[in-house]
Image 1 (cartoon, rainbow, N blue to C red):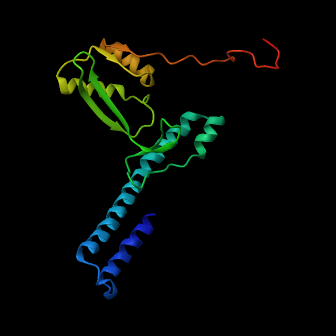
Image 2: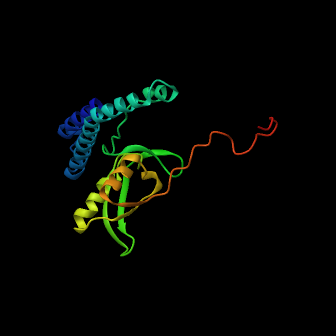
Image 3: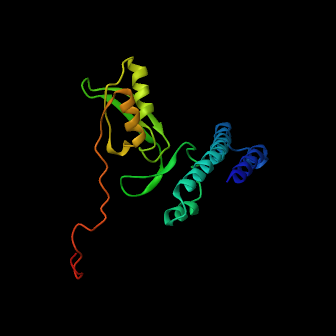
Amino acid sequence: MLAKARQHVELLRKQVDSPEHEALNKLQKAARERAAKEKLERVEQAVAQLPQLQQRQAETERRAGQGKYGQKVRQREPRVSTTDAEARVMKMPNGGFNPAVNVQLASDTVKSCHCGGGGSNEGSDSVGLSEPMRQQVEQRTGQVVQQHLMDGGYLRNEDLEQAHAAGLELFVPPKPAPQSFPARPRTGTQAW
């Protein structure tokens, strides 16, 4: 894609200087050239993101192990968005997958005001986003956070340990226990 974008920029430069395209006004010429340059910049930014994604992919492969999940992880190829290099493909509420950014907000539940916010290209909330958000709120407000109400997707052992060490009360719903047996016997099979 990078090579095609560069070829497109060169083609437009030749067209701008050719006599048959003299009829185009200066604004149209400038707009076409600007659009081609912007596309080239977006593709270059996307290519620059690949080493970081490849490093993350290698770490994920290492943690996944040799089982079925590990094989599935190794088959994935790191991909970047040419429209927004910072975006990552994430699962959407409608069940589909689109390039997106994970937006985080922090608010004071008593005063009903916004205290912090930011965006991340992590698809999951459980990668350690709560501690940086808490630090941002403390920096902005000049006060120490004493209680933290979090969405259940943020729950990680590391966050629990950090909160305990800081004397912070966490309010977060627990993750549901995995079910090792079906809730009810299947029809046509023998009961347990």
